Image 1 (tube, each protein chain N blue to C red):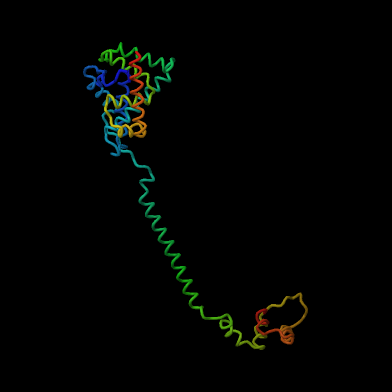
Image 2 (image 1 turned 90 degrees about the horizontal axis):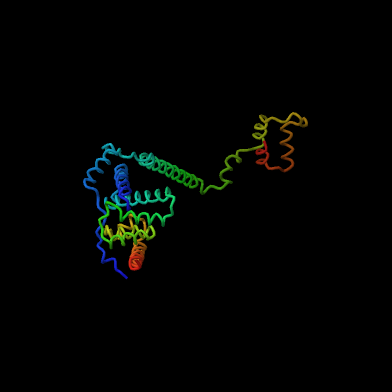
Length: 140
Length: 141
């Protein structure tokens, strides 16, 4: 088998005389000798710094808002931590008596279609029926 | 490229395209490798155009080029080089490209890998197969 190493690796093709001068002129002609404009980067690349800045500001605002909400809710829960429901409502109900309930009831409208019963009578009835004063007050 | 006219077209297109896309050159590879990549693509485009426009099969096209070598004004080789060129023409396209790059232009496998977007191992194998086939063809003649 003949080895290719015995064949010279010099390119056997030659070029016409003055070829490179001629091709040089043709290429300059084809490009009009103008330096190509630098390609404008895509709109995303141009806006990228602004998009990053906007995203950072939005992220900061959202984080701050969330943090403030969390701190405030924690603070409110601390303020009411040792207070029971009974303690919270007792000052309101301790001042209640049958006369003040009747007074408040005077301003409440009674449906006109119902029987002709006064509010005082309703309260008396409920009290006699062992209904708690607090419940009556809530209903009114 | 066997025909001077094809090589001439490929060269002109290479430099015109390089001129137009010089802004895209990123120093990831050397300027030589970048230009060689454009030249290889231009040469392959011309070859494919010729294949598409030709009414004869690619094998017949090979023999057409083979005849062109001996009759060409621009071929300056001896009988052994004619044999070598004919053997190269019989290679599959990829092996022919790899062989020409390595044998005549002495391009490193690493640069070839960038130009042809192929692994170094595959290129070495291609060159090895190409050399074997060429030696078989030459010895068979």
